[in-house]
Length: 127
Image 1 (tube, rainbow, N blue to C red):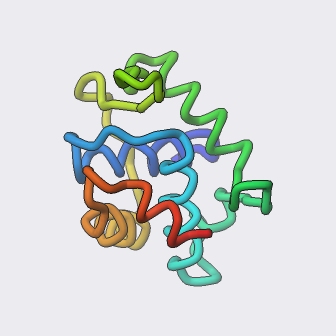
Image 2 (tube, helix red, strand yellow):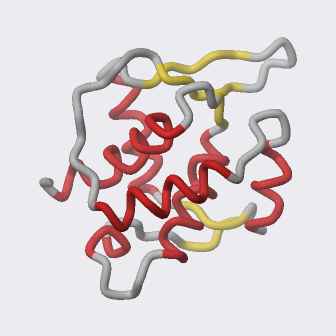
């Protein structure tokens, strides 16, 4: 997979595992941070997920731009809750991305442990 498609492919994999999820951008960052931390040191996908510590935990400009690219391509869309919170939802069946088996397995494990009604608890564990 081209370098530019690695992170969008990982984000797509989150929603492929759980198409029902509605996640904040923060939650997507934290999921991919946990995936990065879980992948072996020599995994090529790990190198594509640069994070730095920001005011509210791990943040990645690459993840942020990948989210925007997926929104531009119509794969993700933003939905507002009644309280005005913005959530990312799976918009349609996207074109397939090829995700490395190791990363796919890790994403599956991380995403399956998320309670969609209490995503904030997962995010706080990353802090």
